[in-house]
Image 1 (cartoon, one colour):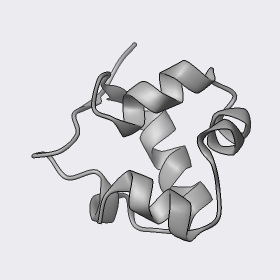
Image 2 (cartoon, one colour; image 1 turned 135 degrees about the horizontal axis):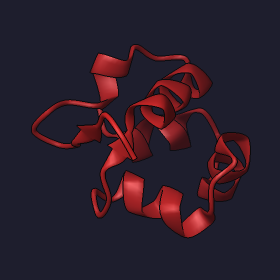
Image 3 (cartoon, one colour; image 1 turned 30 degrees about the vertical axis):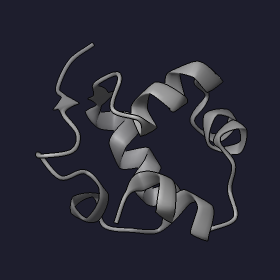
Image 4 (cartoon, helix red, strand yellow; image 1 turned 135 degrees about the vertical axis):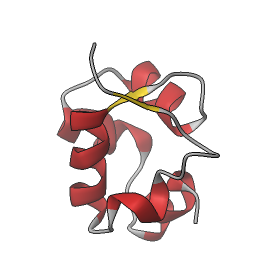
Length: 69
C-alpha cells in the first residue's frame, strides 16, 4: 500500500503529517511523491505515526531511505 493511501485511510492530511514530523509541508509532499529521499529517522517516525510496519510502506522499489543527512 502506498504511503498516501495509508495516510488518507488514517484521516490525516499532508499538513498534519508535516506538523507531527516537524518538517515543512513541501518536504513531506516530496517524500510522499518520491521526489526526495527520506531520512531513516523520519521514515521510522512516519511508520510509527501511521501505526504500520516500516517495511509495509517503504519498499526499496518505491522509496529510498538514506542513512545520513
